[in-house]
Image 1 (spheres, rainbow, N blue to C red):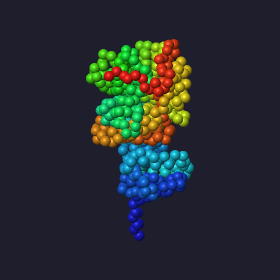
Image 2 (image 1 turned 135 degrees about the horizontal axis):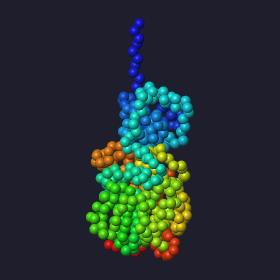
Image 3 (image 1 turned 180 degrees about the horizontal axis):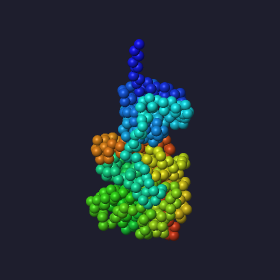
Image 4 (image 1 turned 120 degrees about the vertical axis):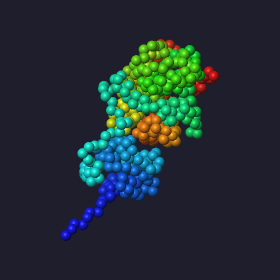
Length: 434
């Protein structure tokens, strides 16, 4: 008697028992509909659900072989996992998964399903090309150069599409949520100059100068002589070009150098914006000592950087560490203040800008999405996908207070620092040069 042919099993049918297990652990419906490569779907009972698109068994292989953030990141960056719907709303829904724990039996069931779907072939899929694998001693000069260039040496044109014509990085400073990005970034640059009490003829050092925005603003509006340092050749090339176009090349210099390689003290004022995050926990005090050694007596330094609200150990194997900021580390504000004080600097002012960063990030996301074909052409599909996820997830993290950003102003001892008696006066000094 001939055997009855087996009815093909859809990918959704294979995964349905896992979805049921997951919902029991969560105590609520999975907030995503999942569409699989064979066209079958796991339809969510959540009416607000977005649709996760799993394009091939390789997406499942990434997740099974590297459970957690890295597996999902590889599937997303490679394009094997995609989303139909609002990414920020989907990330907000995914926050329901926090704290969900799985048993050994759950994991065995997941492996069995992956094998049935053909996701556990002989060869594991290669990680996306955009994934960083730093080599050498952590935070050595050579490794820091490589890690920083992974983030910044993408394409100046790509960054212009994301950041806008000002090419200013880190969070802007908004007087109103309705401000344009360019207005808010100009206000941020001026806020830094005002806090530093910049005066004509002073020497300003900008550590991590990016594409030269602060150097140009400070020289043009405050009459300083400025030096900017960056580890990115691409940034330095564009910054120098912008200085020439602004007619400021005779008063400003851009160097490709590490902060540890600056030795031409003294400087009257130092700004470090969005740079200390690359320094590392073990070198935080060394960083503060170096800034102190470069300041004249009575000089001022402003450190603008992201801080972690709750302490966590260094995580090199997460999405941010592998795809965005290799070797980057965030510290609590208390650790930053302590490092400055141990270095002999007097902390004079600290301001939280947490609410300003999600406003900035969402404008960058809007720029990226509006210029998507051009961004992909300039930076590649993987890089564009990294940035879309990174900026959207970061906006969520700032919103919920997991991370913040602080401007800390400190003074070197040995002479009068020239700061006013009140904070209002600090922020509303006399008008800059025309």
